[in-house]
Image 1 (cartoon, protein in one colour):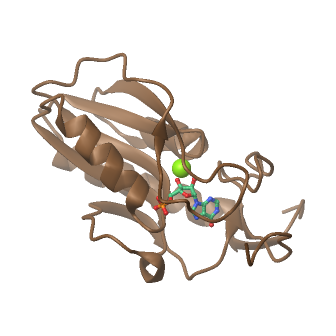
Image 2 (spheres, protein in one colour; image 1 turned 90 degrees about the vertical axis):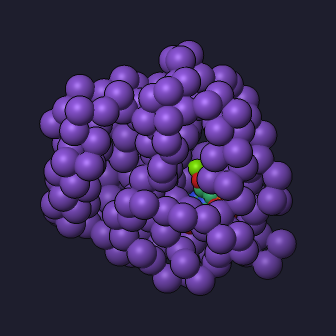
Image 3 (cartoon, rainbow, N blue to C red; image 1 turned 180 degrees about the vertical axis):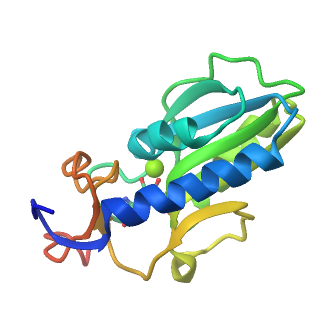
Length: 180
Ligand code: IMP
Ligand code: MG
């Protein structure tokens, strides 16, 4: 594989295999249910597209756009919902699709906000999780990979809005505002 940038920690092959497993598991768990996949943009776009196609039951697709980190790599703890859902989720089963659960604040906030729309259930599926960094206790049903406390980019994840298009996940070693 050509190395574009950074030190890969999850390769394209590992990603593909794990997403296939997640898709299979979700297809089984949600068989016969009214599943709505809610992608959290921008970060989840790549994972979402691959996960949705690995799910073998009919789903509805929807997205929300949130901003939490701004231009910096450190969480402010504040999450801003920039767009709303377009699908009706009342009485349906919602799976929130995230790129990464770090402090947990983003998904906690989103769960609360989506719960007001009275879905039958809401669960979280994240490509990545950094358990060491958790500050709130959120239940994450489906996790692609648990990773250590390192800043990663690629496969949807950014550093200052760049590197989302890397086809694999890489550790960002050089960060200008790491200590911010
Ligand atoms: P949380 O609210 O602290 O859980 O942060 C979740 C959000 O922070 C994710 O959706 C990402 O947008 C961003 N984030 C956290 N860790 C990383 C990372 O290592 N690389 C890129 N973005 C990250
Ligand atoms: Mg995100």
